[in-house]
Length: 231
Image (tube, rainbow, N blue to C red; front, side, top):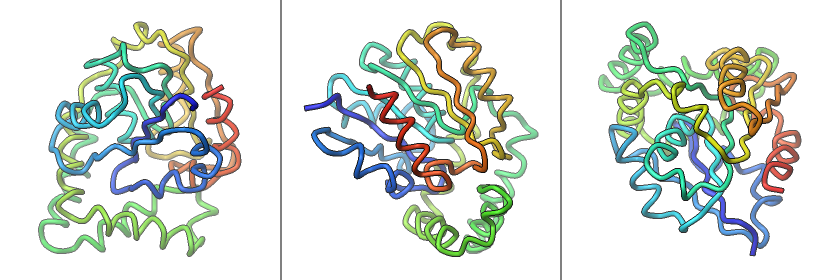
């Protein structure tokens, strides 16, 4: 049996975010997908993940999943054997970054969750993928599966995230830091900052032609990078 793997999806995303990688990663391996839509802050999300996870595991998070992964590393670093930080950032929330999140929460609370998913789509993928209808429908279905209440809880968790940069140097496990070259939400510079902060244990990968949802936009590249990371 291969090393267990815990996957953490992003905001308004489900296990389907990793669907293209699943056939290559799953054979002979226990995979747990974190339940990240039931708590309003990162601490309880990480605690719920740790309760469901095996004793030792590889940990992979995309976007919000990366914020949760950092919290897991604060709570129980000894349980993580390797770390993958995909299209995410170690920076804390700020009033400037929280303002649009507050606006989206207000829309969701008013019953305009469809508008929220439409707004998010404009920034989630590389420009040339905006007309990719199957991809758009998949992203929309994931959002519907999380639902407005889960989305609001997730946004509160993201808005309360701390600065993870001071802890980067303490990460001692092999770490994949990957980002889409056209990621408008957590751009390349933020991935570079994480990789530099972690140091020799980090491998930085910039994926050409991909935006924020690299697992879905460049599935073959992500599958190969994750397989290499898992060894």
